[in-house]
Length: 537
Image 1 (cartoon, one colour):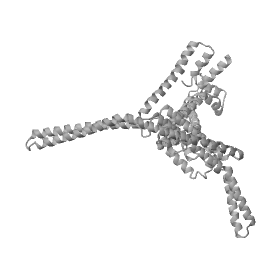
Image 2: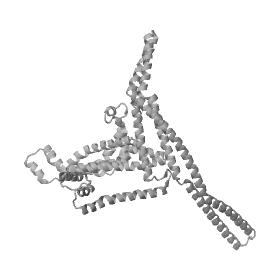
Image 3: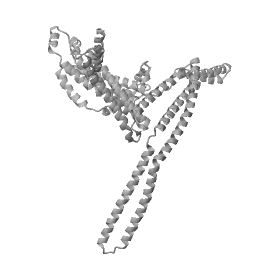
Image 4: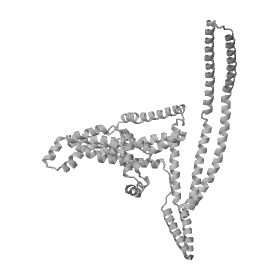
């Protein structure tokens, strides 16, 4: 048991998840009071703080109105996340339905039709529920707005009478003022000014009542909101099942192939019985039909991009840029650490290019990549990447490459600087021993320089990966490269309350992935650290 304990503690230390250490020690009965105190400080208090954040968010969000509706609450954001996952699962299901054959297709079709009948019955119930909720809201509004409408009508009538009375009094007073009566004229101006101020006050009072009526009319009615949400969910599910039914009954690849093969057999029979010029026409039609059959046999379902797919593509893009940055930064950093002359030569470039924004780098990268890859459909690099089994579906294109280059240009600097610092900080005694042993430059590099500098190199790599992940979202947004950034841009342009909530989902997705990437780099950093210092708080 002790061996398991120390294995767990070592794993926790390497991963940087030090808040779990008191839990393990408490399980083994080691200083229970001290471990409980640490659990309260490092687990319970952060959890309570996050719960307080969610409560404050849920309380404040409905108060703030935007052109896209209310700011979504945590429950709405969670529902939006479920909707995103449901859309992905349904598209994957339709993709699988496209390739089903024989009995599997018939079984899936029967199940889909049965599900569709159930959903249609549920939709009728949902429609009735929406009508009932609308009627209930109308009654509620009438009860709430009744006193306000009565007050508004009474005030409006009273204000109109008061204005007419004041205007009549002003006309009467003006008629009694002579041409030389300056005092009377000044009094008239004061009366007119007072009349205008009073009219404005009355208009403001009516405007306040109108605003109160509008707020009540726009107020969310929980029963109606729930009924509409259920109705929308059922409508989306019905649409999905209808499309799946169409695929299984008419658009399935097996059915298309059977139809084309039947037409090909008909052409072959006609060709066998034909003669003269007709044979040439039928032969050309047969060849075209065979090409079409080959194309259908290799075809796949035209699955749209979903957020889970875009997440994978974004992660692939950030790692492509990260590896490119590492390949550039580590060698240059080693040379900077080894040679002060080289460091002096490179320092101006570091100082000049390090602050450059990704918004500046991206257009330059797009232009350069576009100049090299003028025709993506026929370029050898794009076609080769498209044929690779694991990454072909990512549809790597110039926008993807430009985004990766932008990530590399913005994220290489921490690795370069840390590598140079790590190499320059090597103990001189180690280098002296290398000279005594007459190690070659390559041997010194691989056996002393790089191993000694690894902790700082990985510290720089960790920072670079975090910078690259932040840069990538902006790069994808501007380049319209399919990824998380493109998803955010599409949701922003849509402008509905549903897409507004999905943008909040992306905030947590990006944060969670960034946290995971940071944890991964912490593990690598701890594995090459020799001083036992913690990698993260």
